[in-house]
Image (cartoon, rainbow, N blue to C red; front, side, top):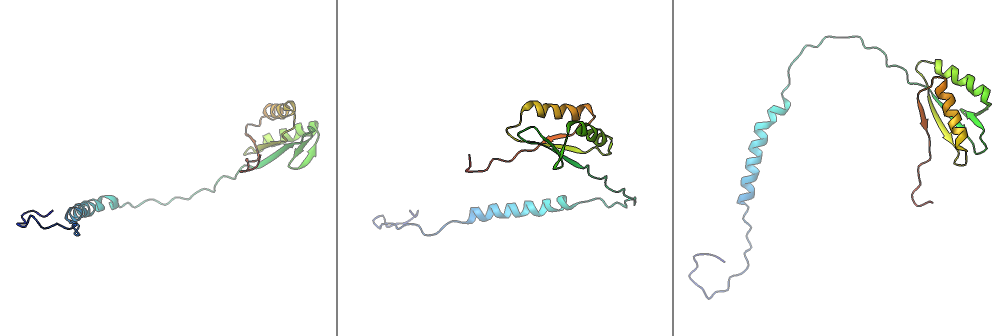
Length: 142
């Protein structure tokens, strides 16, 4: 409805104009704020830094995969090993620097007793990094 109209009997039509003045005012205020604050974000102190010789990155620790099948047979990096040989290999691995990470893969039908014995043997021989490897659950499969 337009104010100040003298013809009260005329049907006013819908207003087709959009008042953009408040939006322009807000945009101009934001523009001024960004112009004033931009130098604060890019300000840096000029320094003459000393040069230094960087050391080589330390080598990544090796990974040893211990697999146990459903029958309780133990595999060291896909090679079958006997429990006595496993003890000797664990002692050798504990002496390495950096110490390797043991990744334990056990079949779902493996007895917990065998897994616990392997973990105890690793700990008693000084190996501290032990991880369990599992297969992620597939979507849609049960």
